[in-house]
Length: 205
Image (cartoon, rainbow, N blue to C red; front, side, top):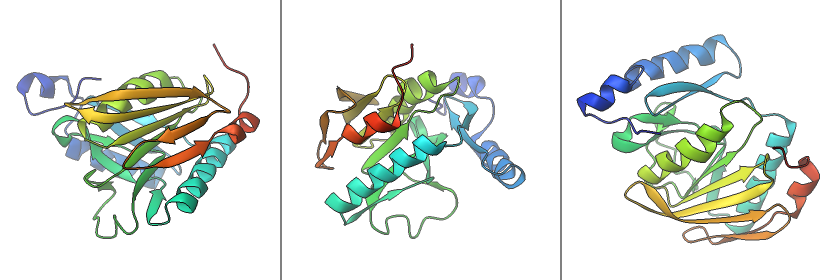
């Protein structure tokens, strides 16, 4: 993903201005139930509607976070202003932040400052590889979100990205479903991913 910024070259590659995208996304949400749009790398895209397995994994993670860190909330469907120069718009599957962190947020798209972790759970749609495995890590690192957690249903792996420096996560740790994984500080949560084996099928090529 090439981040959208204020330079003429970058603006020429963008499909539209962020404010135009926000108007489009608001209209889409009103007119088509469940349709959610994102704006990354100067291009709009559709956020896949979660299926039953996706929702089950989301709720599993939510319970883990609340049980281990009750002072934090895992927000579902919270839009964030992300990427270089804050021109991107993303809707993570989960946003971990202190309780009531978004209480004063106006509008659908919140500033990422103070967010502790962004979470994506892959869906079986055509652009999962580009968006969840390439564009999202870069956008979240550029926004200095300390941890990005990717739960990859296709490869049956969990990948933890951490230590964002100059728009790149310096650390990346991957474990297969069934193994324990530790989310580094400032999270400090241990996840037993054994339940994920029961909710996902075999690895897809």
